[in-house]
Image 1: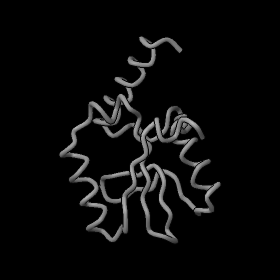
Image 2: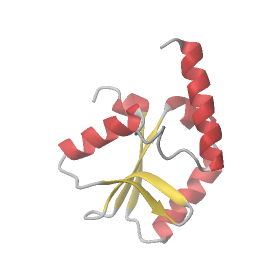
Image 3: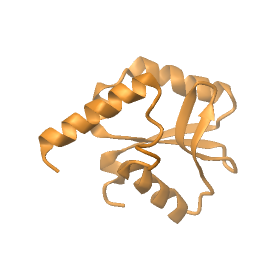
Image 4: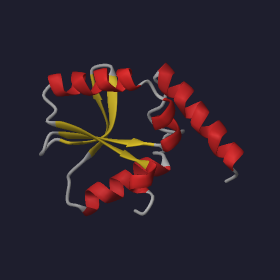
Length: 111
């Protein structure tokens, strides 16, 4: 995929995320979400995908360990609202989630 196409796709995803319509692309997980799934399942975690906590949705959640996981693409991660992410993580922690772990595309690319 050309760099220009990647940027357009990432910008579109960011806009959809702001509108709350980012859960799946046409019913399918993103490449990063698939990599996150493979990583967590390979490590023995029992995960549920796209779990809602109030107005927020996490990419993966392990109810056994009470951990939320996020797959953050580098474009999205560098352009998102850091304060908003902090508030979101604090919300999740305040609702009993033990930890919120963010992995970037760099973390997940080798999976």
